[in-house]
Length: 127
Image (cartoon, rainbow, N blue to C red; front, top):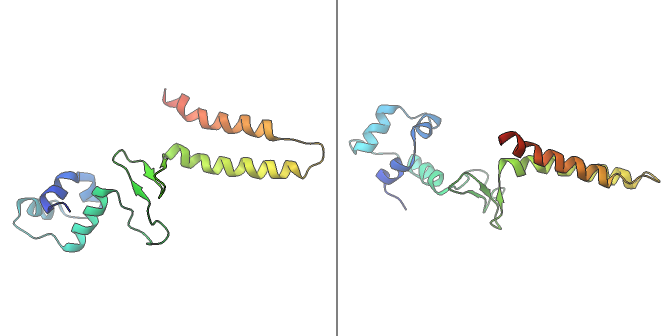
């Protein structure tokens, strides 16, 4: 477990603001002239370690990596782009299921092309 000074060193200014901690209180904690409440220390520790503080069972094993990527309990990395793709994938699967119920129609190729187009679009925009 990190010391209070190490925690504060790892936590940037936006963290202080997000937690609603006044700048002078933060400064006193850093200088050691005031004690940080244990609950705040636990929250900062969780943030530094990338632990998600939420309903214990719903997010058990999930955490954030150092680069901001979300990792599931199996250690698989999920970025914002791949999470957005979950919605598209679900739509693609729903379209495939609907096509399977339509005699003489196989929409798999169209759905696959559209899915890849959507997945590639953010990468091209950032280039």
